Image (cartoon, rainbow, N blue to C red):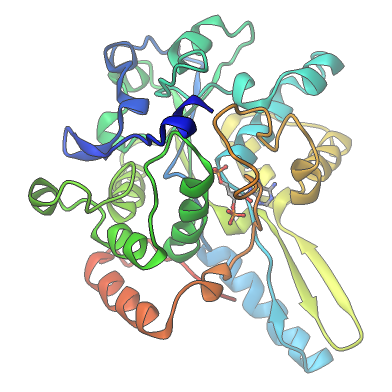
Length: 353
Ligand code: A3P
């Protein structure tokens, strides 16, 4: 409220080659020297993350094919997750049975500390992590891979990265910047669009200090974390869209399929945990968009610096919402720019179904 009254939003500046604000760097000495433990699990994303992977594509192509045979219908998919989504899944996997009070009284952002946050109205992420009474500690970060504190690598910690297609990621991030009073002012959509594309090519950034968004280039973030999967087996790379549900609609019938459980199975296999079928069913239900949106512990309504009168935190959770924001010209510019930046054929994103 004070920041709002003063009309002051934090400014971006160059921090080790990445566009950052003081709200995520003020505690840097402690972040950098953070002592990870071997059983810590680091949840990493570019803010507002997600994507389709090839397995999902194959499943969908098969389903769509069958569906067209059966219903002559278009295929609509609603897909949604994010950092908060995966944080909550992991929290439920490990601590659902701990105490009912925990689920109803501690917001997920306190159960899963945001490592680098350094905002005066909340306890710094490093401190919150050090105070966690539970183990393994689940810790969230948006840091690009080169800024992850060394001790996470030294301790060989498990890490879960979540990516989301750039178009939807950009739209979600834009609305988040509007409502989050400790993010830089997003400005006009067309200007934001350009800054997201510019990301933070280092040289460009030096010449033009605001030609970016917080945490810098989406392209570098998702790409560098993806590359790390090739050498660091303790990194599980997930795609936002794979976890969510999708709908098949005909004129007379809507069928809803959920991939959440399949992705939770993969996550469990990575973590070496084996929840009962009943537990899994409950978790899938609890992490559904509507349930998380209506749950005060997961919808972030307790964050003092979020202004829900501007936009909700749990906004739409859709794949393809970018179509309501991008102009035809922006879409063409985006696609051309994307082709020039995303060269790795093994990292493929889908922006529509
Ligand atoms: P939208 O703005 O597109 O709605 P993060 O948690 O990384 O900040 O990401 C937030 C995005 O994830 C938002 O996207 C939010 O709605 C979506 N999200 C979070 N939990 C979700 C869930 N359980 N189901 C669907 N979408 C979810």
